[in-house]
Image (cartoon, rainbow, N blue to C red):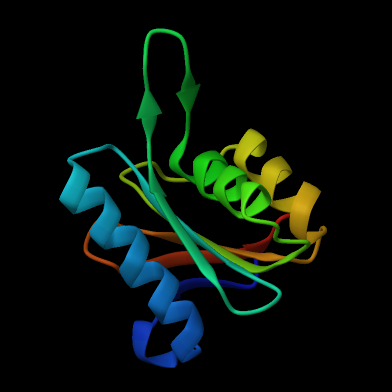
Length: 121
């Protein structure tokens, strides 16, 4: 873990941006999670939880899939806003597959407070 209870004001502005986008997606869509990722060119991809009878994806998996479908070759960072206390291994794996093991994953509470920043691993 790189940092716990990170002050939002201490975050890099680009990381704060993806936390804000993830928070907005969660609130706007009324879903359990919102996520955003930033690719190697600084483009962002924002998503919420997908819950269909035939398809279930977490918000972070959906954001990574959107990045891949749009031609991203790597990720610089990922953020997820959720009530959950941790980022599931399957979400970290999706980030790691595209961004590598050192890609930072920010976990934030619904109010936008970053609870943890850790590598995708």
